[in-house]
Image 1 (tube, rainbow, N blue to C red):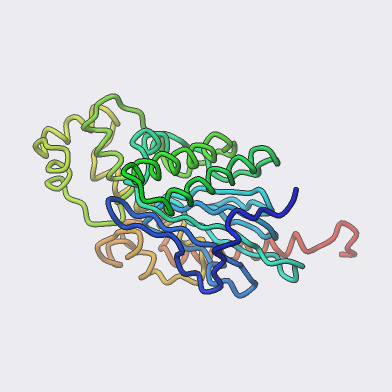
Image 2 (cartoon, rainbow, N blue to C red):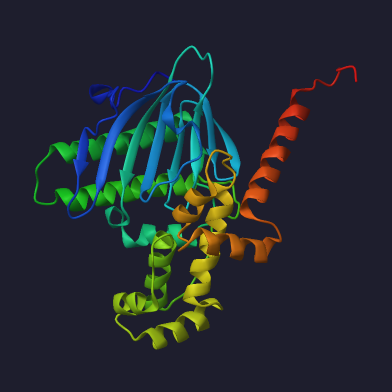
Length: 308
């Protein structure tokens, strides 16, 4: 397959956004050249959605707890629930060249948001030439929408971006426990679920959830319990703990940072809840995980013919 040229006109070595809009939703697109000194080699997270499309080069994408090889034709979709790192191959002949899109939940259709809410797959794919060319065509059309000032520009951008997300979602095959899947026909509960899943790291109260759903907090609590089998506050607590466990995979993050970024009100409370649930402190868990990974790497480095 020939090297794609869809975005060659807006390569940015400084990673500045070439296409950006902030109202009525946020969407920014740029092109990046990833080197061995890439700042995102360590696990990190975002408060927005991301799509990255690999145009050339190679590397590894650490997506939650799974490693995916990266090469031309790869693409992935990340939600605020996901933690990842992009690691370019050391000494590769060509750097990893990608197109990066970041956007908020209002930039995609309600239908796509609902699919993401109910979908348990990791949205990382390796496409064949035909599907990758189709994906690049959608990206090109999206860029054309930015460049054309038409009465329906915002609607066109939202629809094309939504379809681009669907293209990646439909091709997703790898499943894991990236986050729980919930299905409900109650619109009040569904709206509340969406808000919790995308904002659980922020301070959330039942009063706020009730106001957003236009019902009383007590009525919302009853509807939510009937539909999901758990309470709003328990779900938020479980999501925060699940997220903290992912952050603990990074040995370079302090417990204070992990506690804050996971949405816990205080480090002491995080440590107390963690110890009660797992029997050890977060630091002990982090050190244990680090030692296990080091042991695994040592085992992998020993060849089958190594003389023990």
